[in-house]
Amino acid sequence: MKNQNIWFGLLGLGVMGICIFSPELALANFGGFESRVNSLTRSVVTVILPALSILGLIYASMLAVTGDGAAKSRITTVVVCSVIGFLAPLIIKWLQSASGF
Image (cartoon, rainbow, N blue to C red; front, side, top):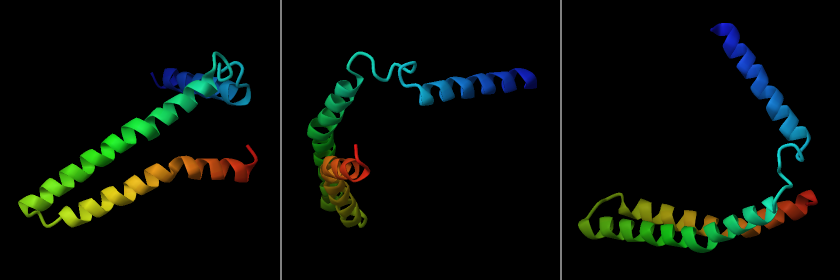
């Protein structure tokens, strides 16, 4: 059983190595992969993130109305995470331009 686990581990490492060093074999350049990732990122930033921010603020405000002492810290956390989330595309573009992509 131990030898079988070693062989499966080596096989997995080999497949990962091939995929990392030759993206054509990993199908990373096949079928508009980059455009799909860009559309997924755009939908996450424009639809899902605002919805989660609003739900988080509603939840934290309900806690504040009921008198929970941790509501203030939760509202602060939701606001900070929302700001970071909305700035994420700008941060990604800045890192890409800094690295030369």
